[in-house]
Image (cartoon, rainbow, N blue to C red; front, side, top):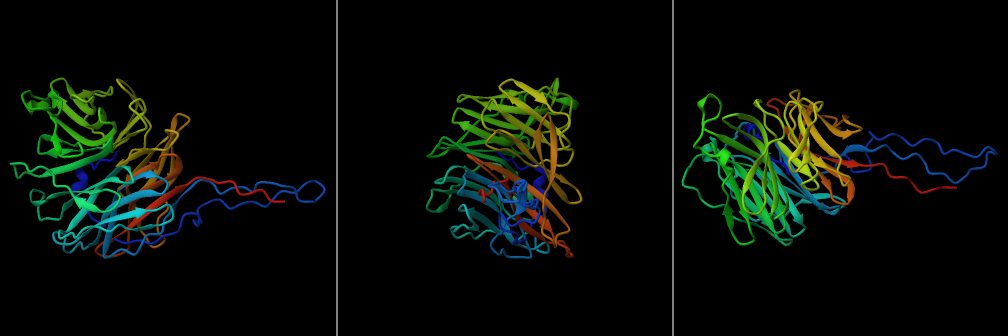
Length: 411
C-alpha cells in the first residue's frame, strides 16, 4: 500500500473539482456503425465497445482556493475512500486546510461525515480491509515539521473516531509514510529522524516494533554515518505476513530494500540492487509471491519471497504509487515536473504508458494515489489539477478506469 515518500512532506497542498461521470468521457473510442449481412438485411451483432479509458469522475463541490487528494483505498466495487484536504490557502500555509474524506458508494463520490475536527491540515493516507474497518492518517499544518501533530482516525462502518498514537518523549518530527490494514490489524510505518517507526494496532492498542538489526545504530554505513533504514510503504496480507519497502545503508550495503514481518520479527530482504542512493516509494501485490515495488527515476522490481527481478525500463519520473488489478497486472503513476502525469501498466514484458485526462481548464496535473478494486476491473487514481492562477491553486481530481464493456446484441 501506498506510502508517502519523504519529499511529499513539503509538497504544496491542493483545490475542489468537478469532472465527468464514469461512462461520459469523450476520451473513449466512438462506436462504429453496425455491420449488416450481404443481403442488406441487418443481423444480430455486438457493437464496437469503447476502448478502456481513464476518465474524470464527478466530485462534490470542494472549498477553495485549493484542494487535493493524496490517497485512495477500496474493499469492493461499492466501497472506496479518498483522503486529502480542502480550503487550503497558499497565502496562509500554517493555519488553513480542512482535512477531507470522500466516500464512493458504487455510483457517486460524496463527503464522509467526520467528527468535529478543530485542527488545520490534511489526511495523507487511507487503507481498509472491510467496509467496517477503515483507517486514515493525517497531520496538522504548522510553521515547521517539528510542530506537526499526527492524527489517526478509524471508521467502524457507522462513524469515524480518532485513535491517538502513543506519545513519544522526543519532540522531533514524526513522518508517517505508510498505512495498511489486514486481519484486524492496522500497521503504520514512518521515520523520526534516523529512527524507524513501526506501529501495529491489534484491535485494542498500539504495539511498537523494532526495525531489523541492520537498520539500528551501532554500526556505520558508507561515509562513516550510522546505519539507517527508511520505511516508505507497507502492504499486509495477514497479521503474520506483512511487507514494507524503502531503503537502507550499512557497511557493505546501500540501496533500495524490502522488509518482511513473519509474526515474530522484521528482517531485511535485498532485491539485487546495491551501491545506489535510491529508495522504493510504493509497494503493491496480491500476495507475498506477487509483489511489485517502484521508486523514482525508473526503479521497479517484481517477485516474491527471496527472489526478485529488476525491471530496467520503468518510467523515469516520480513514481508515487503502484497498484495491481484483479489479474495481478500492475499500474503505476508517472509524474513529471511540468507538472504532468501519465499512467503506465506492464504487459508483454514492457511498460505501456497511457495519458491521464485532466480538467479542460487545468494547466497541469499530478496524481498521488492509485488503487485496484478486488473482484472488479474498475480502478481509481487521485490527485490534483493545476489551475491557471497566480499564486497557483489546485483542484482535487479522481480518475476512474473503466474497461470496455460489450453492448447488448441488436437485430
